[in-house]
Image 1: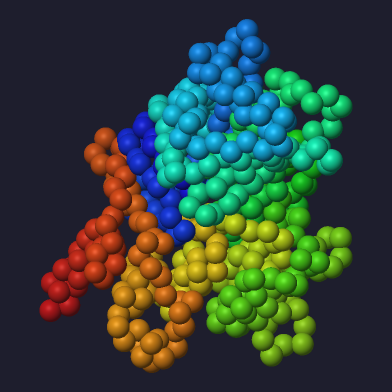
Image 2 (image 1 turned 180 degrees about the horizontal axis):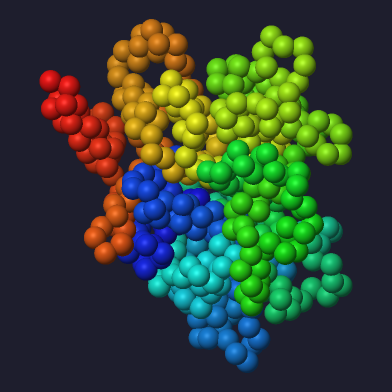
Length: 452
């Protein structure tokens, strides 16, 4: 999630929030304060994609003024590319208009987006703003490849390139209204680094807090029925699961042992299996894809239903890292679930290593241990004697984190039931979380009186 910032107002219990995701983004704070709401919204923007933000195109007769201006600009670039095979323009020539168009569309579609995420009309949002940023110095390159009839859109920012495109199968070198609208959507896809729509391959996966229950019952939930019945359109009835949970179940069901080789997370998976569950999680090659646990030192695998809670809680993470073909982002609710404090530190180490391996993560947590470990790795990365300390505690450079990779947001539940969201600053020793520190201080104060 780069090149944009999220602002919300009147969203569930959240009064106001301004969120800019980092490679590792943490939401901390009180129970029932809106952490999962924020993470679900970020998941929805990433996975439901551009089409959920912009909605459907309108006919030429019904366009707003800003839509007309953007379509006219696109037409000029497309015609130039068709004539010259290439057209390079600065992003600054269109960014302001695209920002206005995006907000116009969000004002119209915001509650449909929220309804899709939660599969319910019960959650609404008063204001949703997505501010595009960091793009003005870039360039858009429109390329027409005549022999293969491919039209490409390439974004270049400070030497970094990303591109998308489509095959143009018509015989005439003349684009129609739907083609212009597709190119506009592809530009937003490049700008925001999100899916085009929900039918794009899932590269941002949600791990819900109720992982054990879903893992133990997943085979009882029919996938076809889930897609047909458990995801609503704008006029349907309320259904059992929110879309992030449906995606989680679909992803687990679609994992394949064929993707086991060439895995960039294999070392991290090995750490998880050896260091946290003392065994391995395997998926059957049979059509039912049964998940089984193989304890270290044993000769037989066990069904997941007889394994310990720590195994069932970590099984989804291990399976996704082991078998998911492409994974760019992980939305992880409460990674500390069912973990002893010692294992909470180990899962924090895993999180740091995943981020350094290129996986973007958004995490909700109540664990001061996880946060303290992240603080330790930030502090250690800035010490001159980092190599000596790493050797002392068995860390490597892949365990360390730079403060630029981390953002922490605290959700404070106020009187009246509304939540205020505050971005916490990273100091010399990391992030201080008042809600954690205050709870610990209260316990210590009580202990001082009671135990004397």
